[in-house]
Amino acid sequence: MRSFIGITDVGCVRKNNEDSYLVDPKLGLYAVADGMGGAQAGELASQIAIESLREAVAAAPVRTHEALIHAFEHANTAVLETAAADPRLEGMGTTMICALETPTALLVGSVGDSRAWLFQDGHLSLVSNDQTWVNEVGRPLGIAEERLKVHPMRHVLTMAVGVSQLLRVQIYPLHPPAGSILLLSSDGLHGPLDDEDLENLLSQPISLEARAHSFIEAAKKAGGPDNITVVLLEF
Image (cartoon, rainbow, N blue to C red; front, side):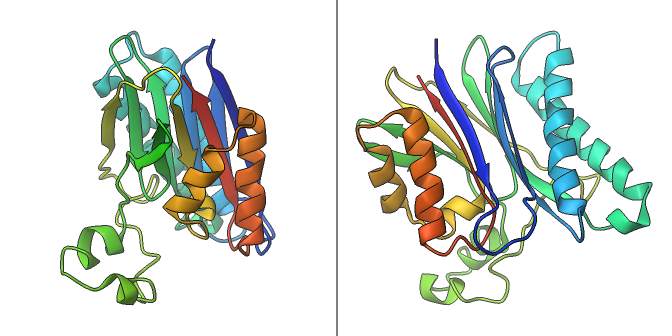
């Protein structure tokens, strides 16, 4: 039996929590979504995306790479249709990262800049690639990291769920060894904390639940500028 936990916190600055997460061991599906939009739109977008993803995975006859892409597309359509039906929700969207257990691999699916990491043998490695201007435009252009940290485009996503009919879903097949831990996070965690911080927190000889709470507290201690969401899955 795998150990797992999901936890979210509004952080220290925001009034609303626009993050949502899913932990469904029966489906073998774990996800984090970070919504965006005015008023309650971001919160609604992330909730709809997560529920629509779960719905599509549950309905899939076989859990495959294609089935996971279809589930993201189903979520994308659900958010788009909700926004189209209410002018107050115009412009809403969400990131989404998930892990799906299949007969052949653990499939990580991603849209946006929420992240997946794998911690094994004391080392943390990033699984996903941010779909952001910084990662897909700024770095390829050779702009220095110091400039990218303060660049006016640093918060711009190049892809999100519910923003366009065109959706570019990234899929990463994994075969996590026994004892490893998969971390899914919204940028409220990996924004204020760097890779070394996360690795040190995961290295603590404490329970999975305690480690999840330590992530939240560390992000808040670092200012907690955004909502913070963490899902941990231990193999």
